[in-house]
Image (tube, rainbow, N blue to C red; front, side, top):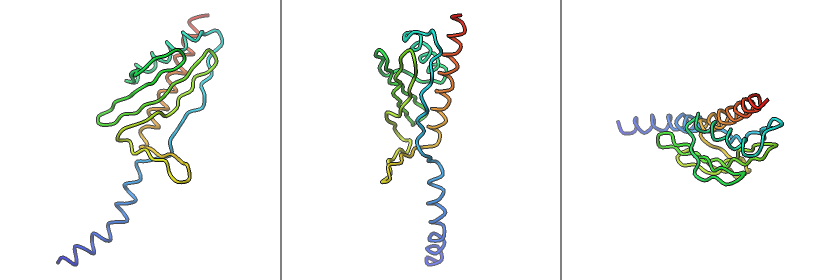
Length: 138
């Protein structure tokens, strides 16, 4: 009976290994977001903060042109550094907890696939908020 159980477990091992990797993906750092003409650096910062709040992000630190944004979801934490001026906004990975982040030997960074969705949503919301503010300014 023990031998039979051992054989079953041995046969299931490859499946478990494959399934444990399905939750990770290459780390996504979005392309710079272009700021519409006419917005000041201060207005860009405000647009970023409004977009962050919409998605549940908070600011761990705020300096002129830099925001360290943090998202807490259940037991997971994502951190990104958002740098900005009157021309563009950049979002870059700054750290995480319980998101399976790893830098592989070939230099490719991987992370839980949900992180990439959160970053895409944040970038989309920042772009939309910048457009909205530029439109209202006209």
